[in-house]
Image (cartoon, rainbow, N blue to C red; front, side):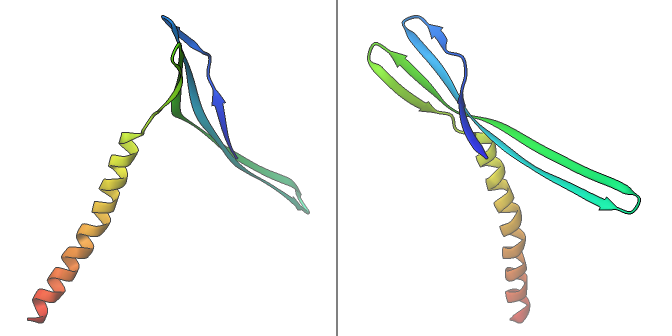
Length: 98
């Protein structure tokens, strides 16, 4: 379940800044009835991620997105870690054919 929440407004001079965040909840419940009794398991995960800042002022309202550069960098590194060994394997096999 995804929900966008707003934080407390922050006053900066004539402007007001309003932070926005996305909250993601996930969980699972399981109950087992056995001859020896009842067993229950529950787990839940909550993720809070800032997504934007809304700036309100005399000239109106604008939304400033917050980009997660670390996640983009890590995704690129993961892609490189998968592709480079595959490309090297193909190069070695082509070299051995000749």
